[in-house]
Amino acid sequence: MTGSDTNPLRDPQDRRLPRIAGPSGLVIFGVTGDLSRKKLMPAVYDLANRGLLPPGFSLVGFARRDWEDEDFAQVVHDSVKEHARTPFREEVWQQLSEGFRFVQGDFDDDEAFERLRTTVDDLDKARGTGGNFAFYLSVPPKFFPLVVQQLKAHHLAEPAGDSWRRAVIEKPFGHDLKSAEELNRIVHEVFEPDQVFRIDHYLGKETVQNILALRFANTMFEPIWNRSYVDHVQITMAEDIGIGGRAGYYDGIGAARDVIQNHLLQLLALTAMEEPTAFDAQALVAEKTKALESVRLPEDLGRHTVRAQYTAGWQGGVKVRGYLEEDGIDPHSGTDTYAAIKLEIDNRRWAGVPFYLRAGKRLGRRVTEIAVVFQRAPHLPFDTTDTMELGQNALVIRVQPDEGITVRFGSKVPGTSMEVRDVTMDFAYGESFTESSPEAYERLLLDVLLGDANLFPRPQEVELSWKILDPIEEHWARHGKPESYTAGTWGPKAADEMLARDGRSWRRP
Ligand code: BG6
Image (cartoon, rainbow, N blue to C red):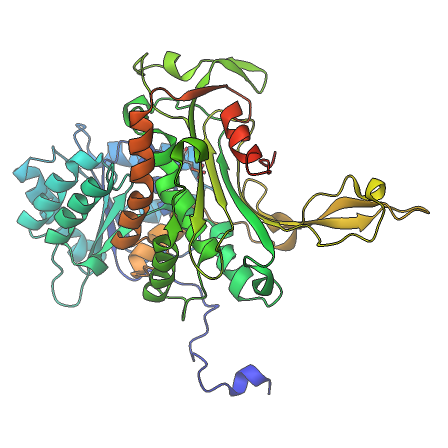
């Protein structure tokens, strides 16, 4: 018998068994939108295809379009064909599509919400959904209050008996701290905190969850994961795309609100936090919250933050427009499409270690990574000429694409002299595992149906993140126009200067 077999604390349930959702259904508001078509519908199909949905699973679309159930089914079909991760299988599709319903109406249409209630009740009878429904608000935040009030007014929010009702909310969770608090208040007037699932799809990414595995399932990293060894941390979210057809959403929001407030600060929290007492929602939020609470902004925001806008340039051999020339953008817009900020974390582990965060559209290439850059060796017994090409050790968590981890260190160059040069050691998901990674939305939708809240930010995290960002946005609003950078490059000169002043430079991934 092995040691673990005798462990009295061992959970008798084998965790390797697939987590399959029980009887349930999903209602999507905003079902005609991009997110629904590109991510949600394909994720539902992929879950069904993997056998992770119950046989009677039902999907209800709610929108203004004058559609019948069949039209809705056709739209889901097309979206699955185009965007699903797993192969199309007719028998899976047949069974799944029997549970599709469409409810036509406006958000202020009481009759439509009554029809929704009847639809949900009918599905319970016809498909055994057991009264368990999640309501996905894939709608602009200005509609949140109305939709949640309607759910309450038509008795859709409260579960009967031991069934459940859940609300799933997409970002943006507000525009600043004040609006986020207001949004949380409105949602919690109708739903209990444990009924609400806020989506930050980065937390559904395998590589992001792997930050916890890397740190807390191993012994070799944690001893050096602190100010004694780490020089600084760089968190990069670079995208090659522009704003495409999202002008309406993006203009006035910008890179910092769009992705730093949520995705990048969540990555920071997972990288910086202490070990949670368990892998459960409460323990995780406790540690992430502590990390976010310890974040300190630089005193001189002018020197340690940069925002910029892309101008016309070349990307992948194609000439692309500048931000101000994009369709639907105010030609005088001051919205940032690039943002870089320096943060410090005031605690024993990280005091004095800067965390540099940057995010941008139309950058050199699409890459998201967390680079933990270590201090230089305190002394090199080799000739300086032989170590000229030696950089700093680094551990890079490659969130996407090309998911994996890279460790960079110095190694002797073969030959008769003691020349030392940087080399890398790579772990690639694609090579080490045969299973391909599920899409973030697959994981998160399944977790909603299972009621597993581990990978969903809680309201206090959302509010703390706004507390960090608000002074920066206010500073930018007071100080004129953003810098500019040419599309297809790695961002504005000012961002390079920001790091150069600290004697450092951005990685060119
Ligand atoms: C979204 C942002 O949250 O994340 C988009 O609103 C961005 O602007 C997207 O393009 C990027 O997601 P991913 O998973 O492709 O990195």
